[in-house]
Length: 469
Ligand SMILES: Cc1cc2nc3c(=O)[nH]c(=O)nc-3n(C[C@H](O)[C@H](O)[C@H](O)COP(=O)(O)OP(=O)(O)OC[C@H]3O[C@@H](n4cnc5c(N)ncnc54)[C@H](O)[C@@H]3O)c2cc1C
Image (cartoon, rainbow, N blue to C red; front, top):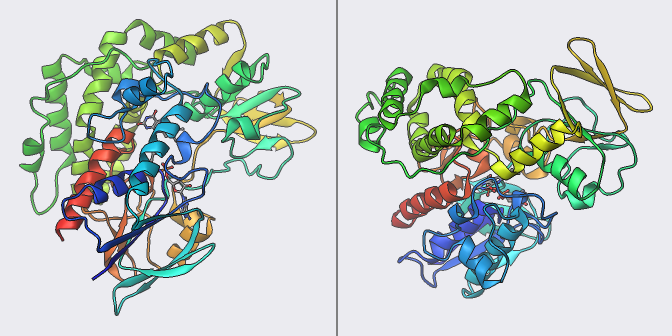
């Protein structure tokens, strides 16, 4: 019997799913796989589209790979005679990932790449099948993977459609082209840093103001460590499962024990000098200590994803309130080269970070007001606040329809709810047997497990479970 599979979204998660399915020993001629995405994102995903080469990976090039097999990104760069840097451009990673994806799809006639967006999925409970409607066709499938990535960009100051407001800046080299006047960026995260680099290095602007509520920037990647985890292990964590729950207090205690065994000072979590600039300098000057903390977090990240579904609702909220900000700050650090450049620009007065932003008023210019009643005016304002988290607030047709049909529901922490096998939990039908979601869309269920390497591993586990089924 033919097994018809739809993968909605051909970014990093969709790409990894395809790879694991076709390489599984149970894959045969009975499978038919359709993958939907726009042509420019197929095989690459949103962060790795064609864009300026000054937008860099935030993970060292030699730690990036789309497979668990040896053919990794660095080998690909070498094979193309592209210089290998500590951090290559995200565009080049997209070229690599797309090439691997198209090669995998190309050798299987049963795999079709469909260059369009999906707008709806209708579940037929009686025959357990899914009608997937795209911009060009509607067809029935036995299984659906929802891998559409981040939701739309948020608009915290309701400026969408205002002239000279750039709501979603990516691709930067398409959306930000003729800046003629002063420019501000809302946000201080990795996307804001992309904008600063692009504006100064490619658009030759004199200076950029970064506006945010907290002024907090990601940390700076320190020295790399290959840590041998002693206490915070899968067995230790699993031993805490009681009545299908794990206590957050026990996890915190175990993590502290691991920190102490690895010689990581807990105080590092609270290292935040007065200014953003000093914060960056601190990390640059303490690369060994900061790196050990970061690589400890990276090493145990998959375990946080494992325990997260076992927390009670109140433990999840407490975790997000008290622990998450500490992990988040150290989880996706910026490359040290990028930090050093930012410090230089800040010292030259070309980059200014303004925190305490309260509201933005539009007159002939944008008037950005702080909570201490200071006002800054700029001619152009770029939104780098990132995506919305609540699926119920999303405006793209597919998610709107899925919410409306009650196929998906928002997780209390953002994204949508899935079970431990990544089956979607529908408020109308319960756990959907063959509809799965993974990637950025499940960021709260899979606590922060969205880096390429982790996604490649978690999609493998998910696919293995499904293929056995
Ligand atoms: C700016 C940025 C930089 C990052 N840098 C790194 C890094 O250096 N290293 C690292 O390991 N991780 C990095 N990450 C994290 C990680 O790579 C991404 O989170 C990863 O791309 C998530 O995979 P995904 O498949 O969920 O989403 P994506 O890769 O974005 O794929 C989702 C795909 O779904 C498609 N889609 C959306 N709606 C529809 C629809 N209705 N129909 C069909 N298709 C649809 C989109 O076009 C997109 O191609 C970065 C993330 C961001 C945002």
